[in-house]
Length: 120
Image (spheres, rainbow, N blue to C red):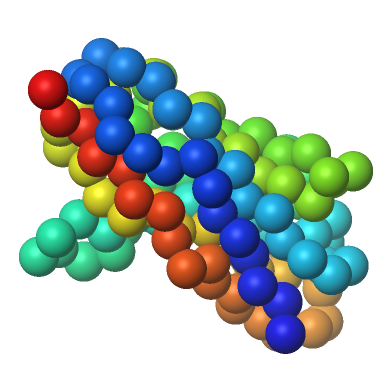
């Protein structure tokens, strides 16, 4: 069973920065589209950013210009660099792996999440 493993969460003051990492075991990373999602208390899980196997990225409007998603296929790791953090960025952040276009295997793997708290 593939299990994405997130790390890097924590407590940060408004305006601060954090970098999240997600390592994906197994051989699927290079053929996967990777995503970061978040879920705040009492709210539904929402998309933060995605990056395709080819490196194309999409961002939620709320984080565009402040967050950067990137990947290192050699390390089977996807990153989320977060800058200018706001209190409303407080949430549990989840890593997700789905097959890229043309991959016949079907999967949808989620990590267990890492807590990000933005507070003074």
